[in-house]
Length: 213
Ligand SMILES: N[C@@H](CCC(=O)N[C@@H](CS)C(=O)NCC(=O)O)C(=O)O
Image (cartoon, rainbow, N blue to C red; front, side, top):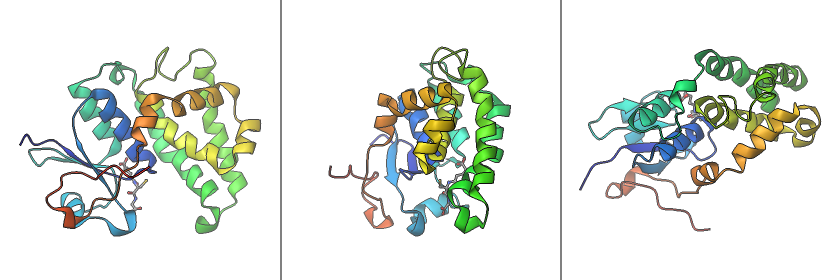
């Protein structure tokens, strides 16, 4: 049997979403293992003790356990939509640090004991950078979706979902349109297909089974 990479993933994780979309667009074959975060498989923890998803274990045993690195690995093998050239390291860093910081303190204000409205305002201020770009072009990286679009939108989707009514009334129109387009895409639909969780007991099965509809 031809060995293919194994992806440990969690459907609702925005980091895992971006990794899945890059793998799917690249056409690289991989075995999807759906993880329950409170009961992570020992096989995943053995590969990556830090215990975050996504984790990609290559056929030769090499482990890639950062979502942006998984995206880059997939696209370095095949980048049919030319996502890699447009990637903006500074924008990606802003979203993975500052935006994520404010998103968590807005969405989980009770857990963080924070004022959600302060963090909502900070998040909205960061979206102004996207607005500046999207006022001139349909996607952050140009006329077509690119690395930054796919890496960022799952987090903006979470931000929008905390209070959809507020987001619709306050987020810049180009950002709302961009988000709606990406959410409605076939690629996102494919990346959000449901799988039953994979457990260590499924030794003989390389991948999760699709969940019943
Ligand atoms: N920097 C990592 C972050 C991944 C991450 O934090 N994933 C979350 C889920 S969205 C996780 O696995 N958290 C561990 C847990 O909840 O136990 C990446 O980009 O892959």
